[in-house]
Image 1 (tube, rainbow, N blue to C red):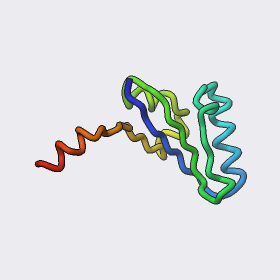
Image 2: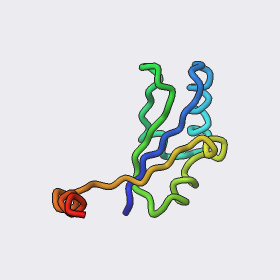
Image 3: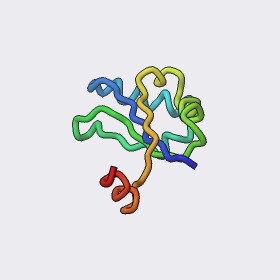
Image 4: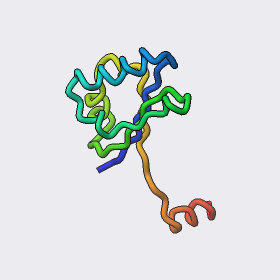
Length: 89
């Protein structure tokens, strides 16, 4: 199953941080328990990494209010063999 990184930015106002948290909590999304926040370090974004079947499933896990600003990235790992293959091309 593919693994996805999701990033959801918000403004640096404390009220916006709380708003994003409350939107996730009130939506019943289980993703909030997997979230990492950069707010205390001045990076006003929320991230989570989670396994999903596809990007559509990722989008459905995000509350509608947060979807327009969400960035979704499918993650992968490269093995040494993979890197060697690209070096010879």
